[in-house]
Image (cartoon, rainbow, N blue to C red; front, side):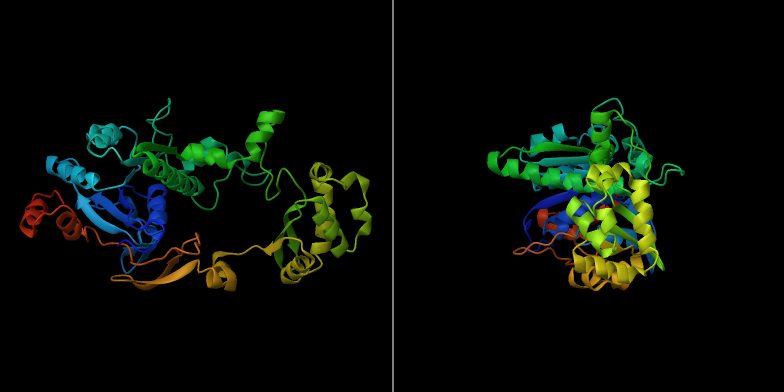
Length: 398
């Protein structure tokens, strides 16, 4: 179901499973692309079996595969490969997240597929990428967080290296491969030449470490776990209040001056040892004591309102229930939207975070049932008759 979005008319064969690849396909579909979820015949994608569930349907799957059509195929069979190659001839993008070498063993790797569709953008997202000494290693999100250095800098100083609260390596990989696809399509549209997009979860997580990388590369220092504090500016941290905690982001000297005024501490504003950002970073422990002596006397809401009114970035620390109920995030920005699923019924899923003024994203249909669009795609796109489709079904090709 191609919409009127920015990517309307773009055909994507999404062969991916679990998170990174489906997340990329989801974004392309939300932007209007005609994304066809290609699943293993008789089994389906792995994420169909991941909770939470509603009426027996995976909410994990429903969220990541909204707006997509669904077909099944047995790529280990000769007829299945023939079907897939026929689809590739009609497609703009193939998106896969198999372990490197898997598609080549099937005779469906980039070099083979580009022969039948030179304009094809072939996008692969994997744990370690398609070249290098680790390319054959399996890779999930937790592997990328561990080997990128992300876990080593997440958590508290006296705690263990910590995985982030969500699968950030997968999400970063999905975002990265989506960007790579759009760049490759831009090149394709200008030159007529397709190409391969190779994204590794580990690389994506490494790229996200920004200042952590540069501290080591420039200073030779290995950053450690520092809780909610930021390495490059201070006060930029969480602080205790009478009824919980809040975060305050005084990222520059001007904001520090305003914060001192709100704290009624002009002596801190003129304290020479804390005059510059680098000084406050060096003296962060002492600075935190002074700021927290003030925040501990007030409730979170009062502190946030007061600081925001003064122009100092501050926020409460939400749980997900508060995020959903928030009038800006869950309301005006529509980060949670209602859908009607034929089995799960009416439910909320995560909305699109990309807002376009002229070609807005949209959630046009729920995720597909297994093989839901076999007749439409194989019949309408490839011209197969119902009798031919029934034979393929009986032979367990689709």
